[in-house]
Amino acid sequence: MANEMMKRWYNAAKTRASVREYSGKVPKEMFYRLKNFAESLDNGDARIEFKSKSGVLERPRFLSFLGGVGGTNCFAAIIVRDDNKFMGGYIGEAFVLECVSMGLGTCWLGGTYKKGALKNYFDLDEDEKLLCVISVGRAADKPQPAEKKTIEKLTGLSEVDFNELPKWQQSAIEIARLAPSALNKQPWELEIERDYIRIINTKRNFGFGDVDCGIAMLHIEIGAAACGVHGDWFFDGEDGEARFVPFADRLNVFADEEHADDDTYDPEDDFEE
Ligand SMILES: Cc1cc2nc3c(=O)[nH]c(=O)nc-3n(C[C@H](O)[C@H](O)[C@H](O)COP(=O)(O)O)c2cc1C
Image (cartoon, rainbow, N blue to C red; front, side):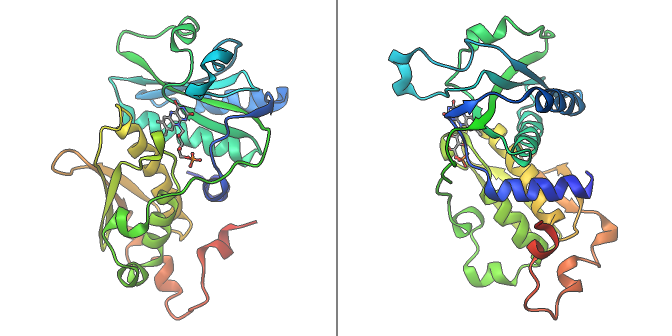
């Protein structure tokens, strides 16, 4: 992915929080930009349709205690082929971070929307399924960040061990930790080895566990990229778990090694505008 885009998404990942109350829909020019962006994310395993329709996102007022969003009718529908939930999570989060970097608010929705009404708007192939939607609009208020699990809980590493990791791994873990997940359960753990990070799903999380892992995968990649480390994913764990492995040509030139003698080095210095 282009470095400029990674920079925008890094900043978006650090500042985003779910928005459930909106003060207006997406301006026309942004809407068409996002529609094109959504189309560009289609990779055969998952695709996104960005739409504006009333009666899909809002619950009837008498059911508002169940949650849901209000104040916008724009949403991205995440459609997956062959139940590829990882990929749905991965490209859906790319869409979220692009929206946030354009100054918009978003919220992943797996349950609190009108799925029945929504299905009428799509032509799905036999092997396709609607996975989730993402509401998009202008946030009514500044969203409040949700509390996340500690790094120790997510990695099993003490603070001392974490601080000894190469900078690219520290940054990948920190950005993964901020990833959204259904019910904020963060149903995954990270296995850290010198030259890889593996993500292990620990809970079904009401059928959204793999979506949550796909979202966290993108965050890992963005965190590593902030230190100049790019790589690829391999699904080669015992149960097919995903492993992020830096490209071989980067192994000896990790940005943290370039900055090994510089105690004041912080990847954000390179990334923040
Ligand atoms: C796959 C998925 C499904 C979600 N479904 C809903 C939902 O149905 N309703 C809702 O209000 N929030 C939903 N959320 C938003 C989460 O509750 C939210 O991401 C989590 O509480 C963490 O907060 P944050 O996004 O502000 O970091 C969902 C999130 C994910 C990733």
